[in-house]
Length: 251
Image (cartoon, rainbow, N blue to C red; front, side, top):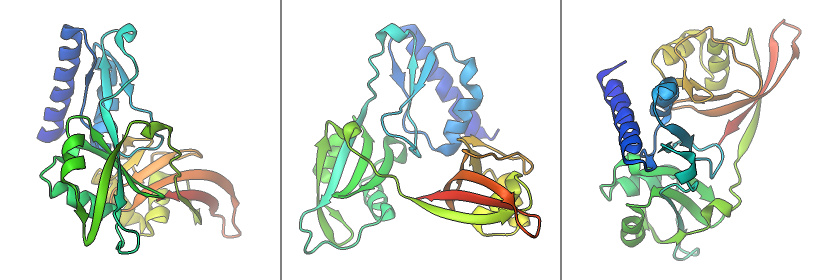
């Protein structure tokens, strides 16, 4: 592990110890893919039971609750849903996920306090820690050239969040990880190997450095700087002897 990774694991251990000693549920910030993979790797070492936030499916950034006793946990996480909408649809410009995130970072908010930012019919749903949500609601007035409003959504978990998946089809020589990454990232096997060895590839939220790791139907692959994918079907062999592969690209 790198020094940063060792420091992060120690931070998890401290949260675990604090929750156990105080006999009170304690929460992490929002974890990125690498941090969540480290959590999974060390999960069995903690004294407390751990619960991953599951209010919305397929989140990129996770929050963990450390619970000393299940009887004192009500299932609630310190997460606020914020709805960002254009003040005037007539004069609204195009806003991307990157635009919204960049504006939030411009408010000097640490990235770990912001969870996923999801497109919804009205605009964007932003997940934020309770502690920072009021500031966002008060200070976020413009994204690029568009004036916006931000309102808190107490029932955001009950909203229907439509996930967009683009169906993809391809052929691979085998179901090894390097073959699958090369197909999904539209690159060579050697480039795929570099991505894997650089720690950019995750299988079902676990970081994988092994190019020969097997991939199966139902697996979710996250490739940093490329995207998130789900294997839907492993088909028959093509005329050239390659495996027909169906997968979805999560947008």
